[in-house]
Length: 381
Image 1 (cartoon, rainbow, N blue to C red):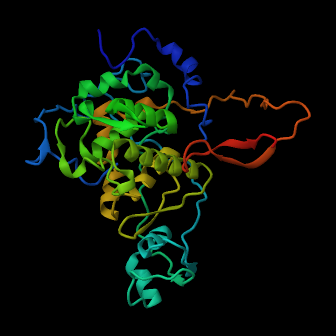
Image 2 (image 1 turned 180 degrees about the vertical axis):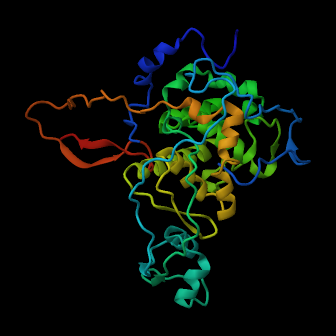
Image 3 (image 1 turned 90 degrees about the vertical axis):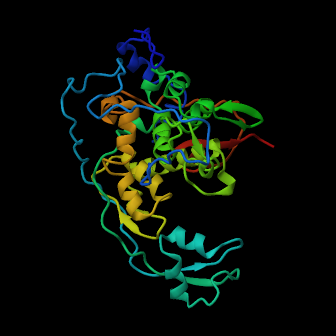
């Protein structure tokens, strides 16, 4: 056999040795997609149509280095829900907010998880486009919707940039799938990168699994397997419609940061609900795992309630991942942290007797969504 998707020279026995050497995986300390169907080609598409045959759920993509968690032909069972967590409750009383420079009413409403109309009504605003710095607004409590599902979408080891990715040639995998991503390139920091190089760069910097990023991208726009790309999603392939986040690189960095934010907040019981784009507050199920919370949080930033519920169901991102890479929990490494993992002695590179300044920390290791992974020190003046 000769497949570009894996390196047969690496044996399964090496996986756990590789596990703790992957760049970014330990750097962050393990501190710690969409209801709309993939956009199919239209007359406004770019390129020629290439038909991609997806495997069915009973005909999985074959990655021989994976452990045999299931015998061939065995049915796929939903993972057991996690033990109950004590999560933050939803706000039940109105609060006040003082308008700051550059605020917009829509941004304020979104920040508090309420609709724009609710804020306008609570404050009897005649013209919601006019706000004054220092103006005090009443923010009503959100109206909770039905609880979120307890369906576990992916294992925790499939959100972080885990060890199995060392055995996959992502560039060849993307080319094999033959989608628009395989021909994409973009300038990042004055260097032209291919689509695969962008995915790899974001995965490494954010310590987020590149296969999860590909599954999200495929679910949103079909870029991984569809040879054509619609003109209306070229600038925002993840679906986050922000002019400052145009292009694949900025879209993926935004998505990775939000995946991290949901993942790590969940690990410290800091995420109890999601605010969807239509202003619905959805209580999180206390029985999901951290990776599922990360995915649910990401989609809440992109979708209305109905679309969100589809995206986080068995027919949503989970199905897309399964078509691309097989059953997500066949990739699980549990426990994610080996039981004998210990914090090494931290030796700071300071001269003896020289005082340095500690301006702050701990803080995120990369961007605003990652877990606390860094301290800041400043040399003497």
